[in-house]
Image (cartoon, rainbow, N blue to C red):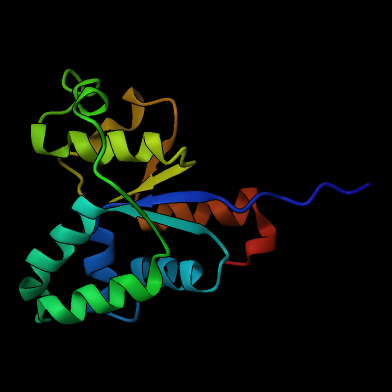
Length: 152
């Protein structure tokens, strides 16, 4: 019997959502479409949703637009991680405000954490083993290689 490939579980950082809402072209928008089409299981947290809303103005959108569109895309929204879960990453991150991203990705049992934050998140690629940290471009390449049925 042929084994059906599992849909990759991807935790999204706010930067990717904002980039995808800002432009219909590019890797971030492509990944948001993959979530819409159930090619990947996209997960965010309440904290990420709040950050998308707060930063919507930076991409020329209203908070209401950002919230509405994000909620249309993401069906899986986690509660904020526990303080204990967040503190496990205190020695890893350079910006303590990013601990919740790693803790949420871990709690979501995600295969990937996708971000555009080179300085604070992508720089941690070699320090995390539970999930793969990558940019949208890298994730699309991984998906094409590891899960060809997804057809990036």
